[in-house]
Image (tube, rainbow, N blue to C red; front, side):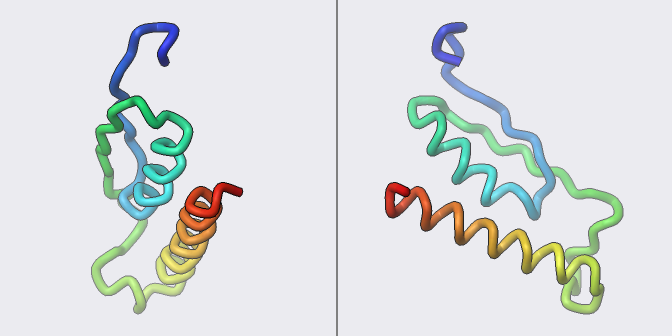
Length: 77
C-alpha cells in the first residue's frame, strides 16, 4: 500500500465478519485509513440470530475469533 502511495483502504466483507477484519487490518496497516463497508449476506439471519442454528454457530464462532485476534494484538503476540 505504501509503495503504491495509497493512504486508505475500503474493506468490504460480511457484517458479522467486520469487527475481526478491522482488528486484523488495523494491526497490519497502522498508518492506513480503513473504511469499513459491511454487507449483509442473504443467507445469514442476524435478526433473532439465536433462533437459527447455523447463524448462531457462525456468530459465536466469529466472536471467538474476534476475541483471539484482539487479545493477540493487544498482548503483542
